[in-house]
Length: 259
Image 1 (cartoon, rainbow, N blue to C red):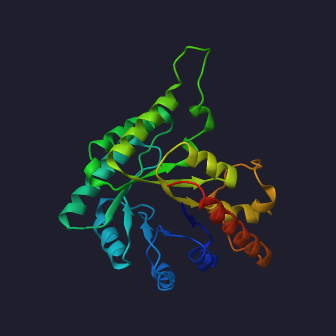
Image 2 (cartoon, one colour):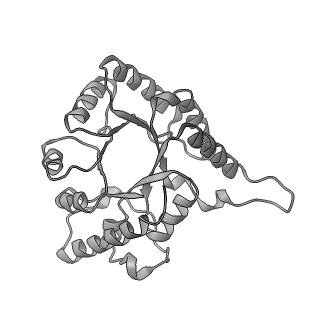
Protein backbone atom coordinates (compact mmCIF):
# COMPACT_ATOMS: atom_id res chain seq x y z
CA UNK A 1 0.00 0.00 0.00
CA UNK A 2 1.25 3.48 -0.86
CA UNK A 3 1.23 6.39 1.59
CA UNK A 4 0.70 10.10 1.00
CA UNK A 5 1.86 12.29 3.87
CA UNK A 6 0.09 15.59 4.49
CA UNK A 7 2.47 18.30 5.74
CA UNK A 8 2.39 22.09 6.25
CA UNK A 9 3.01 24.21 3.16
CA UNK A 10 6.30 25.30 4.69
CA UNK A 11 7.58 21.73 4.44
CA UNK A 12 5.87 20.64 1.23
CA UNK A 13 8.89 18.95 -0.32
CA UNK A 14 9.31 16.74 2.75
CA UNK A 15 5.89 15.28 2.01
CA UNK A 16 6.50 15.06 -1.74
CA UNK A 17 9.79 13.17 -1.40
CA UNK A 18 8.51 10.68 1.17
CA UNK A 19 5.11 9.89 -0.35
CA UNK A 20 4.31 7.19 -2.87
CA UNK A 21 1.70 9.44 -4.49
CA UNK A 22 0.59 13.06 -4.09
CA UNK A 23 -2.65 14.55 -2.82
CA UNK A 24 -3.37 18.14 -3.88
CA UNK A 25 -6.32 20.23 -2.75
CA UNK A 26 -5.20 23.31 -4.59
CA UNK A 27 -3.44 23.95 -7.88
CA UNK A 28 -1.58 27.23 -7.48
CA UNK A 29 1.98 28.16 -8.42
CA UNK A 30 3.30 26.79 -5.12
CA UNK A 31 1.87 23.35 -5.77
CA UNK A 32 2.98 23.44 -9.40
CA UNK A 33 6.56 24.12 -8.31
CA UNK A 34 6.52 21.01 -6.12
CA UNK A 35 5.14 18.90 -8.95
CA UNK A 36 8.12 19.80 -11.12
CA UNK A 37 10.27 17.80 -8.69
CA UNK A 38 8.48 14.49 -9.12
CA UNK A 39 6.70 12.18 -11.54
CA UNK A 40 4.63 10.44 -8.84
CA UNK A 41 0.91 9.73 -9.32
CA UNK A 42 -1.30 12.70 -8.44
CA UNK A 43 -4.73 12.70 -6.82
CA UNK A 44 -6.43 16.10 -7.02
CA UNK A 45 -9.17 17.19 -4.61
CA UNK A 46 -11.61 20.05 -5.21
CA UNK A 47 -10.44 23.31 -3.62
CA UNK A 48 -12.40 24.73 -0.70
CA UNK A 49 -15.67 26.28 -1.82
CA UNK A 50 -15.58 24.55 -5.22
CA UNK A 51 -19.11 24.99 -6.60
CA UNK A 52 -20.69 24.26 -10.01
CA UNK A 53 -19.28 27.45 -11.52
CA UNK A 54 -15.75 26.19 -10.74
CA UNK A 55 -16.04 22.58 -11.91
CA UNK A 56 -14.72 23.16 -15.44
CA UNK A 57 -11.72 25.14 -14.16
CA UNK A 58 -11.06 22.42 -11.58
CA UNK A 59 -10.94 19.74 -14.29
CA UNK A 60 -8.78 21.84 -16.62
CA UNK A 61 -6.25 22.51 -13.88
CA UNK A 62 -6.13 18.82 -12.97
CA UNK A 63 -5.40 18.00 -16.61
CA UNK A 64 -2.64 20.63 -16.73
CA UNK A 65 -0.75 18.98 -13.86
CA UNK A 66 -1.29 15.54 -15.44
CA UNK A 67 -3.30 14.23 -12.51
CA UNK A 68 -4.08 10.54 -12.44
CA UNK A 69 -7.39 10.99 -10.65
CA UNK A 70 -9.71 13.76 -9.52
CA UNK A 71 -12.07 13.63 -6.56
CA UNK A 72 -15.72 14.26 -7.25
CA UNK A 73 -16.86 17.30 -5.19
CA UNK A 74 -18.73 16.55 -1.97
CA UNK A 75 -20.14 18.27 1.11
CA UNK A 76 -18.74 16.74 4.30
CA UNK A 77 -21.37 14.77 6.20
CA UNK A 78 -24.25 15.79 3.92
CA UNK A 79 -25.73 13.01 1.78
CA UNK A 80 -28.19 15.11 -0.26
CA UNK A 81 -25.75 17.91 -1.09
CA UNK A 82 -23.02 15.42 -1.97
CA UNK A 83 -25.31 13.57 -4.34
CA UNK A 84 -26.38 16.85 -6.00
CA UNK A 85 -22.74 17.94 -6.34
CA UNK A 86 -21.85 14.59 -7.95
CA UNK A 87 -24.62 14.86 -10.52
CA UNK A 88 -23.70 18.45 -11.44
CA UNK A 89 -20.02 17.57 -11.63
CA UNK A 90 -20.58 14.59 -13.91
CA UNK A 91 -22.54 16.78 -16.32
CA UNK A 92 -19.57 19.14 -16.60
CA UNK A 93 -17.10 16.23 -16.77
CA UNK A 94 -18.93 14.77 -19.76
CA UNK A 95 -19.50 18.13 -21.47
CA UNK A 96 -15.81 19.08 -21.48
CA UNK A 97 -14.76 15.57 -22.53
CA UNK A 98 -12.47 14.99 -19.55
CA UNK A 99 -10.75 11.58 -19.52
CA UNK A 100 -9.25 11.64 -16.04
CA UNK A 101 -10.23 8.88 -13.63
CA UNK A 102 -12.79 9.81 -10.99
CA UNK A 103 -12.90 9.07 -7.27
CA UNK A 104 -16.11 9.19 -5.26
CA UNK A 105 -16.16 9.94 -1.54
CA UNK A 106 -19.63 9.07 -0.18
CA UNK A 107 -20.65 11.01 2.90
CA UNK A 108 -22.60 10.39 6.09
CA UNK A 109 -22.69 11.16 9.77
CA UNK A 110 -22.87 7.47 10.73
CA UNK A 111 -22.95 4.05 9.06
CA UNK A 112 -26.64 4.34 8.15
CA UNK A 113 -26.38 7.66 6.33
CA UNK A 114 -23.08 6.63 4.76
CA UNK A 115 -24.70 3.47 3.43
CA UNK A 116 -27.51 5.55 1.92
CA UNK A 117 -25.01 7.78 0.11
CA UNK A 118 -22.86 4.85 -1.03
CA UNK A 119 -25.87 3.15 -2.60
CA UNK A 120 -26.66 6.32 -4.55
CA UNK A 121 -23.17 6.25 -6.01
CA UNK A 122 -23.66 2.60 -6.93
CA UNK A 123 -26.18 3.77 -9.53
CA UNK A 124 -23.25 5.64 -11.17
CA UNK A 125 -20.75 2.83 -10.69
CA UNK A 126 -19.46 2.94 -14.27
CA UNK A 127 -18.32 6.55 -13.76
CA UNK A 128 -15.84 5.90 -10.95
CA UNK A 129 -12.60 3.92 -10.73
CA UNK A 130 -11.96 4.38 -7.01
CA UNK A 131 -13.60 5.21 -3.70
CA UNK A 132 -12.31 7.17 -0.74
CA UNK A 133 -13.25 5.80 2.67
CA UNK A 134 -13.14 8.08 5.73
CA UNK A 135 -11.17 6.27 8.41
CA UNK A 136 -13.16 7.92 11.21
CA UNK A 137 -16.22 5.98 10.09
CA UNK A 138 -14.47 2.64 10.44
CA UNK A 139 -14.63 2.27 14.20
CA UNK A 140 -13.61 -1.10 15.56
CA UNK A 141 -16.93 -1.81 17.25
CA UNK A 142 -18.55 -2.27 13.88
CA UNK A 143 -16.62 -5.43 13.07
CA UNK A 144 -17.75 -7.22 16.23
CA UNK A 145 -20.90 -9.24 16.83
CA UNK A 146 -23.49 -7.99 19.30
CA UNK A 147 -25.75 -9.82 21.71
CA UNK A 148 -25.59 -13.44 22.77
CA UNK A 149 -24.82 -16.53 20.75
CA UNK A 150 -27.18 -16.98 17.83
CA UNK A 151 -28.02 -13.30 17.29
CA UNK A 152 -27.37 -11.42 14.07
CA UNK A 153 -24.23 -9.32 13.52
CA UNK A 154 -24.63 -5.61 14.20
CA UNK A 155 -25.62 -3.29 11.38
CA UNK A 156 -22.26 -1.57 10.73
CA UNK A 157 -20.70 -4.99 10.17
CA UNK A 158 -23.43 -5.91 7.67
CA UNK A 159 -23.09 -2.59 5.83
CA UNK A 160 -19.31 -3.03 5.56
CA UNK A 161 -19.85 -6.51 4.20
CA UNK A 162 -22.28 -5.21 1.57
CA UNK A 163 -19.90 -2.41 0.53
CA UNK A 164 -17.06 -4.89 0.14
CA UNK A 165 -19.25 -7.03 -2.10
CA UNK A 166 -19.73 -4.12 -4.50
CA UNK A 167 -16.06 -3.15 -4.34
CA UNK A 168 -15.05 -6.67 -5.38
CA UNK A 169 -17.74 -6.78 -8.06
CA UNK A 170 -16.62 -3.58 -9.79
CA UNK A 171 -12.89 -3.91 -8.98
CA UNK A 172 -12.62 -0.42 -7.49
CA UNK A 173 -9.46 0.81 -5.82
CA UNK A 174 -9.88 1.95 -2.22
CA UNK A 175 -8.19 4.98 -0.68
CA UNK A 176 -8.13 5.32 3.10
CA UNK A 177 -8.50 8.97 4.11
CA UNK A 178 -7.79 10.98 7.25
CA UNK A 179 -5.95 8.49 9.44
CA UNK A 180 -5.60 10.03 12.90
CA UNK A 181 -2.62 9.78 15.19
CA UNK A 182 -2.59 6.15 16.26
CA UNK A 183 0.27 5.22 13.98
CA UNK A 184 0.82 1.71 12.64
CA UNK A 185 -1.82 0.01 14.77
CA UNK A 186 -4.62 2.27 13.60
CA UNK A 187 -3.47 1.91 10.00
CA UNK A 188 -3.49 -1.89 10.21
CA UNK A 189 -6.91 -1.98 11.86
CA UNK A 190 -8.53 0.25 9.24
CA UNK A 191 -6.94 -1.55 6.30
CA UNK A 192 -7.90 -4.89 7.82
CA UNK A 193 -11.58 -4.02 7.59
CA UNK A 194 -11.51 -3.62 3.80
CA UNK A 195 -9.86 -5.46 0.96
CA UNK A 196 -8.33 -3.64 -2.01
CA UNK A 197 -6.99 -0.71 0.04
CA UNK A 198 -4.19 0.48 -2.23
CA UNK A 199 -3.41 3.98 -0.94
CA UNK A 200 -3.70 6.03 2.24
CA UNK A 201 -3.73 9.81 2.84
CA UNK A 202 -2.63 10.80 6.35
CA UNK A 203 -1.21 13.64 8.42
CA UNK A 204 -0.22 11.27 11.23
CA UNK A 205 3.55 11.38 10.63
CA UNK A 206 3.91 15.15 10.86
CA UNK A 207 1.10 15.65 13.35
CA UNK A 208 2.55 13.11 15.78
CA UNK A 209 5.99 14.67 15.39
CA UNK A 210 4.56 18.03 16.45
CA UNK A 211 3.36 16.32 19.64
CA UNK A 212 6.83 14.80 20.13
CA UNK A 213 5.64 11.29 19.30
CA UNK A 214 8.09 8.85 17.73
CA UNK A 215 5.89 6.20 16.10
CA UNK A 216 8.71 3.69 15.75
CA UNK A 217 9.42 3.76 19.49
CA UNK A 218 5.74 3.64 20.49
CA UNK A 219 5.13 0.41 18.61
CA UNK A 220 1.50 -0.61 18.95
CA UNK A 221 0.45 2.09 21.42
CA UNK A 222 -2.67 4.01 20.49
CA UNK A 223 -3.14 6.76 23.10
CA UNK A 224 -3.57 10.06 21.29
CA UNK A 225 -6.74 11.73 19.94
CA UNK A 226 -7.35 12.39 16.26
CA UNK A 227 -5.39 15.15 14.58
CA UNK A 228 -6.70 18.38 13.17
CA UNK A 229 -5.02 18.91 9.78
CA UNK A 230 -5.51 22.67 10.16
CA UNK A 231 -3.17 22.73 13.16
CA UNK A 232 -0.16 21.68 11.10
CA UNK A 233 2.23 24.65 11.00
CA UNK A 234 5.88 25.51 10.51
CA UNK A 235 8.00 23.32 12.77
CA UNK A 236 11.46 23.21 14.30
CA UNK A 237 14.34 21.24 12.79
CA UNK A 238 13.95 18.55 15.46
CA UNK A 239 10.24 18.20 14.68
CA UNK A 240 10.93 17.94 10.95
CA UNK A 241 13.55 15.25 11.60
CA UNK A 242 11.06 13.30 13.73
CA UNK A 243 8.36 13.74 11.07
CA UNK A 244 10.76 12.22 8.52
CA UNK A 245 11.39 9.20 10.77
CA UNK A 246 7.65 8.79 11.32
CA UNK A 247 7.07 8.86 7.56
CA UNK A 248 9.70 6.20 6.99
CA UNK A 249 8.19 4.04 9.73
CA UNK A 250 4.67 4.27 8.27
CA UNK A 251 5.96 3.71 4.74
CA UNK A 252 7.79 0.56 5.83
CA UNK A 253 4.72 -0.68 7.69
CA UNK A 254 2.40 0.04 4.76
CA UNK A 255 4.45 -2.12 2.40
CA UNK A 256 3.27 -5.20 4.28
CA UNK A 257 -0.45 -4.44 4.35
CA UNK A 258 -3.23 -3.56 1.93
CA UNK A 259 -3.62 -4.50 -1.71
